[in-house]
Length: 79
Image (cartoon, rainbow, N blue to C red; front, side, top):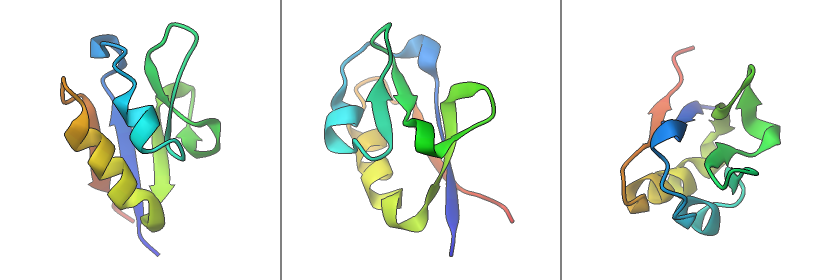
């Protein structure tokens, strides 16, 4: 099953929270009200980076498309 890398240019987040509303299985807002990946899908020490399963790809892409500052990226993970 394919997996997808998701990352957020967190420093550019304007705290709109549309990503967390459209795709709460992947995105949440942190204590500074910046978008981050939910703990289940985070990779490494950066909460703004993660890997998601294929079944969440469409949800994450919809959130990325709806982001008013276009700082969410979803791409296939090279295996």
